Length: 110
Image 1 (cartoon, rainbow, N blue to C red):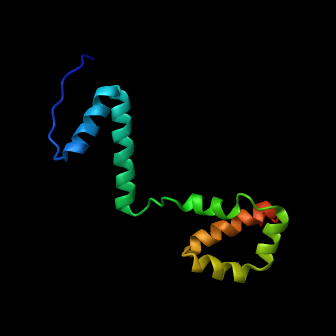
Image 2 (cartoon, rainbow, N blue to C red):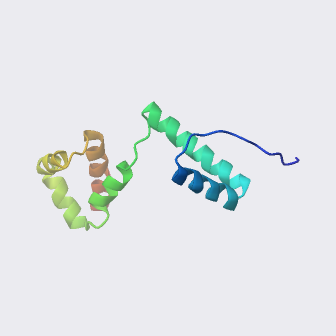
């Protein structure tokens, strides 16, 4: 398929214009399209309310360095842990995911 020129107008600041020009001049068209598809899909998910950015990192932050003994202690004192997580601002679904990960670490797969 022959290549063709494409012209479009976007209102940008001078700095944003330089940044876009840099990207367009240095990236191949396939990579530019890949980035635009990704950004469009992410924007659609965020606008639709089904993108939960950062949730996975919260669970990992709470569980990735725990030993089996520490995980068992947290599960044994779960009501206290719920209070602690709520004070940190975690939602109940996130707390549930943390508990699920703790159960895996402790070896209590329920």
